[in-house]
Length: 181
Image (cartoon, rainbow, N blue to C red; front, side, top):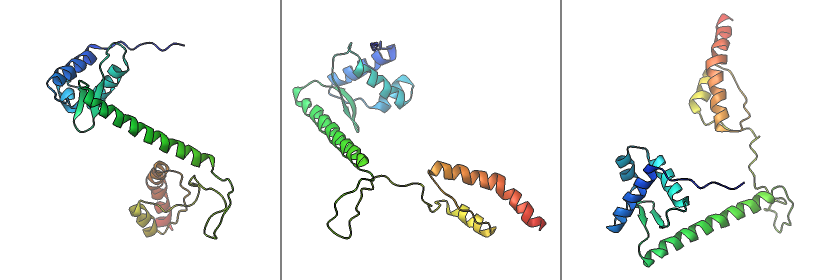
């Protein structure tokens, strides 16, 4: 199935024209400036610029500087910025492939030369172990009411949801039972 070409919207043409006009003056165009000009959020401006870059209608190269903003490439000297982007992407790719390699080595045995090395690769953190709870106020609350709870935690979101359920649902019922006795 062939991917369809995205047709640029009037907002995207307006963004492109503004970047082009400011680039002729050798000025950078910030995302905040474009967002204020168009009355939209920065995220929408970035998405529009991404669509402009992906479009085959606009043939100019849009340079990005995260502190300055956007500008059209107008000198061959600015080709250096593209090379920096390429180097950054290649570094990220190298890091990605190292992580993939580590992932593939998980739980495989290896030859050890000292007694301090492990005889197998352990590249993935085992999250099924008992963990200490980060929310100290909840631990203090549970300790004050003399109720002890053992948790097996997989993610912080699960901790928050579980504690919310315990505090809102279980603890009031347990306190009622405790007060009756």
